[in-house]
Image (cartoon, rainbow, N blue to C red):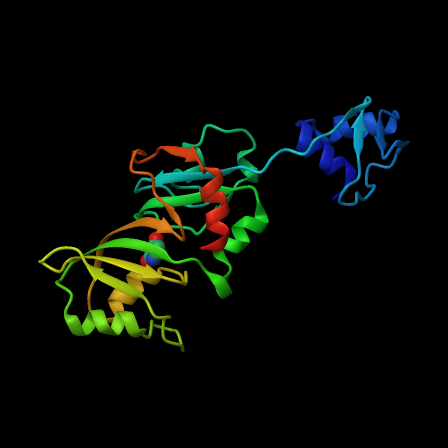
Length: 234
Ligand code: URA
């Protein structure tokens, strides 16, 4: 990473403030004064500002109970965004791991650890995501079997990956569906492919990370160390 970016990110100083400090000789890298703001840093370089080591900020990991009506994006011209629900600094650094539609509720993960986000969402090893799905029509055994096996979504050439499906109620209009992929409107399109319609969609878990029942819609909390580590192996 560039020196000026590193210091600015770690300290909250503006780039201009950092440039001034670097040019006036207040910054050392491994004990040597540097005056070039675009100096590239290596992994274990020790950066000091006025003789004090600059420690990078620790990555953050949050779970949020997304309410309906919020967009999973950093900004949106028309609707509130999930970041509006977080009372944190550096909101622009947070990435959303696995987006939900505006009308979908439930578990959303946010982090500024890009590698962790990638591990959670990379298509090759995508974590299982469990949804509670409320349907317009009772789901037949035949349709359930098709969904478990894989269905062809509109404008796709390959079947969806095998999914886990369990009935929740005897009316057969509420089911739990676990999928291992995240195509656009994945779940809604899967049920449309078997002639049904999703009326409400709620994400309960991503890999090992389960939405905390103590979180009301709109609430969030940091992930525990076990959730962060478990999420990597889910
Ligand atoms: N599948 C959908 O169709 N919508 C979501 O929000 C998540 C998964």
